[in-house]
Image 1 (tube, rainbow, N blue to C red):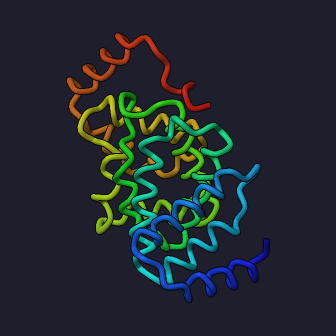
Image 2: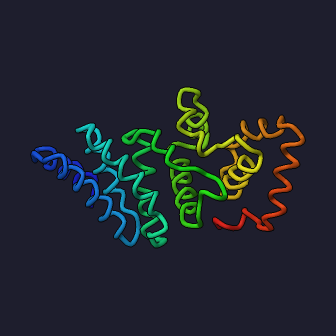
Length: 211
């Protein structure tokens, strides 16, 4: 399947008058077909991007798909998980999907699993590949978009802050944590001691879970 195929498919689908429920079914079907492939095929992301540009309703539908897929990410095997992460990374990188969907992700030890961490790892690696680490960092640091990312870059407690810093550093994306590392260094000593105490009690090394 080539870029010509997705252009033609998008044009034909746009000409079909679908009911609202059918539009959602189309999004679900496209994502399901993408997940079933042995490896990720850009065709699906390009077609979804085309649909989002043609009609804003598809942006809303794929946002719902993102939320649903992430909520049931533990049900996907590694292959499907990777395809789905690549699919949504393409839509985000091309701004076909609004970045506020990332608010569905809460990156803490308690709120993530092995599967969700792998999904986040692939998603952000693909975003870095699409945009470049400098542009990605700029996007994530944009004050106008800060609220979208607060649930990922939590600063409510040193333990949570250290968790995502360690996570992104361990997957080779430590560059996007520099600003928030500075924040961590300014935290009161008592809070840092509390975080270290909590980490010791858990008796686990968070760095190994997503490798």
